[in-house]
Length: 281
Ligand code: F3S
Image 1 (cartoon, rainbow, N blue to C red):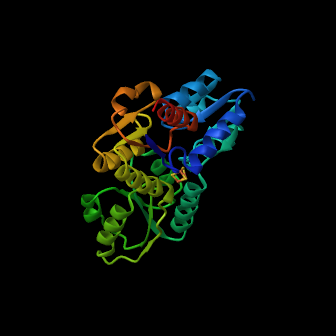
Image 2 (tube, rainbow, N blue to C red):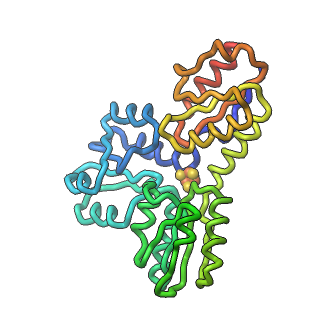
Image 3 (cartoon, helix red, strand yellow):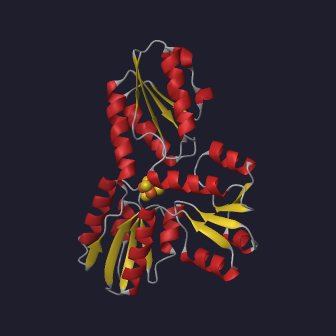
C-alpha cells in the first residue's frame, strides 16, 4: 500500500514554539498556562501530569502570586500583561510572532486616530487578545451581515486586520463590502499562511488516495475544517484523535492512504499512526 504523509501535518511554527516553551519550564517551580496551551487533550493531560496548571480567567490569574505564567500562542490582552507586571509574577510570552505583529499594528493605528476592524471570530481567544491592544473603537466582523451593518459614525480612518487563521477568500469578500462604504481605510492582511498551506496540501493528498486519515482533537476547529476538505476529495476519510481510534481492518481494502493532522496534533501521535499504517500493510 502506498502511504503519503502530508509535510504540513501537525504543529505550525507558533504552536510548536509555545508547546516547547512549556515543556522547557517543567520542573522549574509552579508553572501555569493562561488558557490551555493547545486544543489537544493528550498534550494538556500530559502537562497536567507534569504539574502544569491551566488558568482559565483573569480572576484566577489575580490569585496567583508566585511561579511562572506562560502566555500561549494565541496571545493575550494588554491587561493580562499589566496584571502580571503589577503582581510581579514571572511570565514567559509564547505569543506567536505573527499574532504579536497584529497587537503592534492595532496598538499603533488606534493611537494614531484609526478605529479598528478585526475580521475574525469575536469569541476566539486570539481575537479577544487583539481587542485588548486597541486604544480606540474596535469592531469584530465575521460574516457578510456584520460587514453590511458596519458603520463608522465618527467618520474616522479605519484600519482593518484579520485573525491569523481566517479564510482568505472570505476576508477579501468582507473587505470589499466595507470598502464600498467610502471610508478612509487601510487594509492589512494578517492571515498566517500556515493554515492555508496545510489545507492546500491536505486537499491535494486527499485527491490522490483511496483513503485519507485526519488526526486531531475532536474540539479542534482547524482539524474539523481539514476533515471537511479531505472528505470532499476522498469519500473514505477517517477522523481520529489517536491510533486507538483507527479501524485498521477497513484500511486493508485500499491501495493508497494519505495522512494529515491539525495544527494542534503532536508529532508523536502522527508518527505512531504513520508507522502503524506503513507496517500493517
Ligand atoms: Fe502562528 Fe500561524 Fe500558527 S499565526 S500560531 S504560525 S497558524
